[in-house]
Image (cartoon, rainbow, N blue to C red; front, side, top):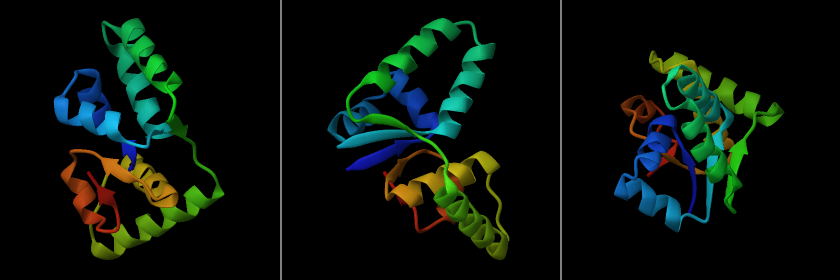
Length: 127
């Protein structure tokens, strides 16, 4: 399985939550959307363990099968589609999570998250 981690699940991984650790260890590949990396680094910048947290993230990103997903033209089209869907449903989710959803859909990944607002997007495969 190819998975993308949401920010909350990266945090769970860093804390050693068994279910997330097992999922990551069994995954064919693990992806962090650029937005997740940005949210993490924003948190590191205001926390008391920024250097340690940055080091942990850096080590994960060096692991085979782990990558950062960056946005491209196709991502912007997926974003627009998700945005339109949410608007027509009369629902809203945070903008950063629309980017995450767009990247997950674009790359055919399963999203590892714990945010109920992703329930608004039934086309997302979630684990």
